[in-house]
Length: 184
Image: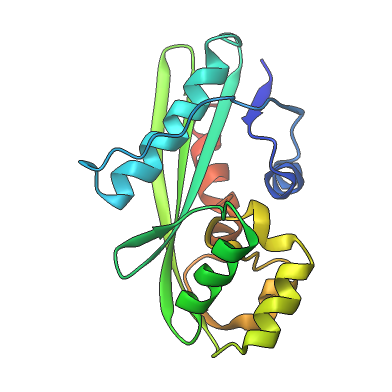
């Protein structure tokens, strides 16, 4: 039985190595649909489950981990920006404010499934237009929910965090580890 990461995120592929288990990474190739009837917490868990299930259908003898991360401010979900202009808009919204980061996780194996989410709060410093422009030029914001990565140059904007750092990165390693221990 192998651990399968239902993600092609380089950050998650790096963090799963901390589990010290053999793993394989497979992209789930699903269309993410945001169901407006779900709460943010339900949505992030649902998206993580959809990703894990899409991979599990072809890997039924393995344990599959699926994840999704949402950045939320004032009830607005900031996903991965579709353009540099949208990235700029997201960073302007986050500037000087506190936002919520939710990471949903789904663990599926034959006869078992478990889904949960973790939550952290992030407060940004006030950002100048030049800081935002320079950060966007790095291209780092373009593949990240909320248009920033706390583990890269986006760390410069973070005034404080409350909660688990790894939730913000998108892989709550300690919680995942505890859940996987139950499967041994």
